[in-house]
Image (cartoon, rainbow over all chains, first blue to last red; front, side, top):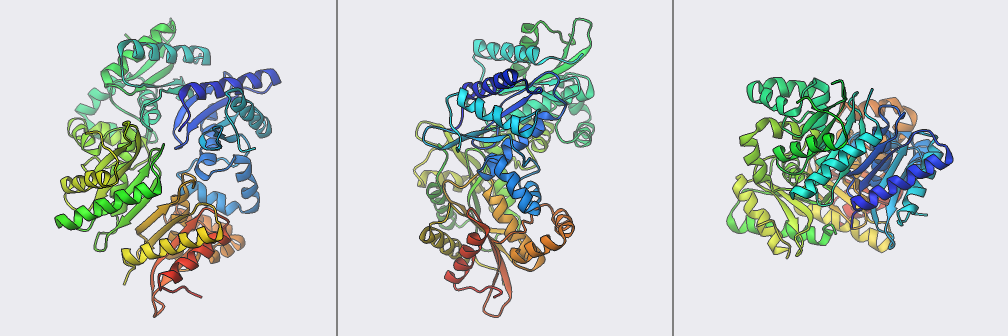
Length: 141
Length: 141
Length: 141
Length: 141
């Protein structure tokens, strides 16, 4: 099963609520289905122009390669040429910093991914985990 | 001024409500700001994979060239080479069929655009006009 | 649910068996999952170099826009500028001639798509339908 | 001579059998002919979406530049700008980590290449060598 629009909107709402509670900079939140296709997106007022593309790239890298974008950052530190090559091979959208998180169902199956951009990468990721939890869905942790 | 996220979400909600009332196929709705950047998007369950890209292309063509995508279709009928060339020149996303509509404020200034894909192009456009009206915003008409 | 590798291989085998029985030219068969990602592919000896790309484009167009590639050909005849624009918008792979067929489960849900290239488009499509049937899966018909 | 589909399928089967025996993560295996064109591919259930593209890039880099992708990794470590430039120059698909292996006949002539992705790069390469050997073909070693 892939994530429904209703669940995707719940992830977005949960992530944004966390951003507001924690005083984060304006966030952009993108949710993809298990095939890597856009389901929902919101860019908060004041976020810069291309935040959708950055958030998309975090989520798309995660669901394309099957790991949270934080793990892709580790790989980028170790083998920058691999991440550069993979980015090109998968079509150009892969942002290897925290904030892209796989969304799983109760059985652990990947049903999609969320990508967030706007504050520090660590805070973006915090909002992503919070959004998934608020929607009653699960992460790899 | 560019469209706020709150207004963009109202356009999406209004368009989707019209789709449901009218019995349209599952719709994908994308709202761009006056700079052509994504503000909000929702893809209804059952819509095919790349509906975001099609809806985006309708809205992006509209706000890039300053006219609803229906007018771009007329141009495509008359001068297909112009639309083909413009599509390439602006980066690949310009879908010249109805369903992409400029969003204006009360003074007539363009504040963004909405693109919709999923049913016939005419119905997509009907939902777009309805969404803008539901949000208290204005069109070129 | 998306198509399994075992089912995808059954589609490929069924399509190729039909090609051999019917005396078709060497076929290339590509099966994508519901998200548009490659699951299985085989290019028969004697098929020309880029048959994978053609077969992929038939299947990718189908699963991206939610209709068999024959319907996309009808659209291309009516509105060539739409198909040209959609091809660009979805990333370059959309071959609007018969031979790309949606694969559905018993409930009618799209679980993937098969694309075939090598003989006439009509024969390619015949092999596609036969492959899906041989695998115990369903089409839109 | 270029690799036949029958031999390519034997490489895929041999590589997958090794993966299952050794307990590797789900593998994606792509076999290219001597011209760098796809002959066969299989993505095992549970492999992430873009594994075809990664496996293809390992094999394509190998057959494009005439050396196993492990050697391209050495080059990437020494001269990352060369690999980045070559990747762009050949069209975007060159993954310079182990798992892409040239396939040779008994006389040492290159007849194709196999690329594998899914487990560690070292394990991917182990499966590649095993697949080639299982098919009665040869490597550069």
